Length: 419
Image 1 (cartoon, helix red, strand yellow):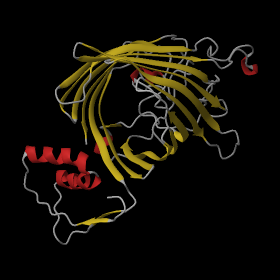
Image 2 (cartoon, one colour; image 1 turned 90 degrees about the vertical axis):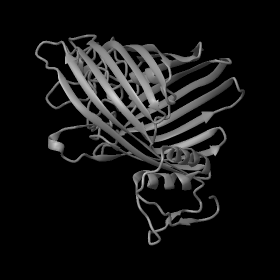
Image 3 (tube, helix red, strand yellow; image 1 turned 120 degrees about the vertical axis):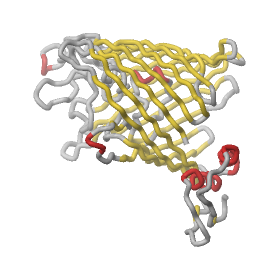
Image 4 (spheres, one colour; image 1 turned 60 degrees about the vertical axis):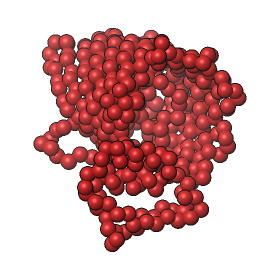
């Protein structure tokens, strides 16, 4: 496709194809490129075109085009053991659709997603008498591979830091930061690939104040191959917030757990945040089964011992509640057809170990000041279909701090389809 324009008038009808024919189209789309991918989308949608249909044109300078998305249905239940609280059940969906054209060494990333405008969720609940739901810009960024070992990115982009599942103690999987990133990866040897990731994340821009809130991140790590079936990946990171106590980030939803200034409608954090974050993963096999052993540790190393507003201590014990960790294992890997996985993780997140507004939103009611266990089992009946049952049991570490007594057991039953 490179170097020439593309124009075509495809012919399709609404008759059912055989499964074998559809499967062949799907495989060929990966081999031939963007043209077949576009034809596949028209075919699956059951669209009909004839000789009078408008042509499909792709700019001649686009060298690759990827269109993808996913749809997830979820049944979710909450069981609360704290006096005065009630159990809850809800049904939800998540829909995402993205397009990624590549022009030589520059990729344009764009994705739409369902949701309510939160920074850590793209879910929509079945609610409000079947009223229509919102669609948001989930990703909109540029990534430039300036050198074989350097990528520059800017916009509303995927999280630039290397992470694994256990890293959701710091980063919710749905969080896509807005700002800039620089990613270095050096292929020094087939058994050793070091990397550096830097990011300048805009948390909030205040029109009436020049003390905008930023997060500056620095990560160093490596991917190593110890043996033929064993890999060890690790990283150390530092995330430093600037002006975090000036405002509440003007966000849609606050994460529970961080100590906040008291007062009606006031939600600014009382703590300063500089998080040191360690992540490690060992990937190997037990017989023919893959296994991933993961661990994360985070601590807030910012100086929070003294604050003139509250004498010699920050409101909410910010100086002591500053450690978090998560560890566990995933046995198997649910990806290809007829594959499965089992997982268990333990999590401990003290009140101000990290910024609650960015942490996993599914652990309890999300945020920090919680501990508990996470289990799940997943099975893929098709390459593109996954069934997953996840159960989280959580307790508040210190009930005298936010969110107060709030022990929750949470179950999620998902069906996901990728396309």
